[in-house]
Amino acid sequence: MIRTLMTGALLGFMTLFLSSHLFAQEDMLKKRKDLMQAQNASIKAITKANEEKDYATIDIKAKEIMGYTDNILAVFPKGSIPEKSRAHPDIWEKWDDFGKRVDSTKKAAGALSKAAAAKDEAGVATQVKALGNTKSGSCGDCHKAFRADFRKAN
Image 1 (cartoon, rainbow, N blue to C red):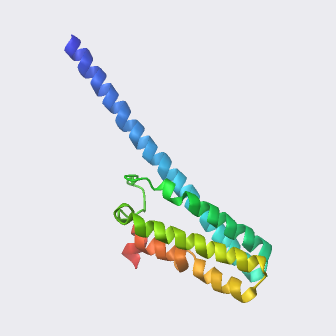
Image 2 (image 1 turned 90 degrees about the vertical axis):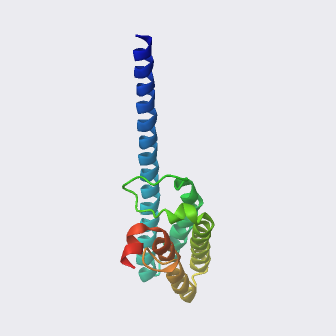
């Protein structure tokens, strides 16, 4: 009787532990997706503002991206690669390279912010390209190296 109770309690604990681990990974994946989608929305707003020569919006959105980059490493904790993730396992194997690419994006966004604040049309054009999107610039470089679906396509 005691053995059955102990086995049941152990089984219940293990089920609870495994399901809480799964929920934690899914929560991290949601945070990761939310952050990347917000960053992508800022990139789109920058592209539109660049067409309109709206330097104030470019400056604001570039600063948003700088803030997002401060949180990117936190949403990629080691082992957080649930089945639905598009992150490539190389992120954790090449963590320093991943971090450098995040820093590169932050620097590109900072340079864009400065060019926009100065209303430097040529500088803004150059920095918009340097920042890029999911297919080019510092954002695209990181996606090509560390996003599984981009690696297959490129």
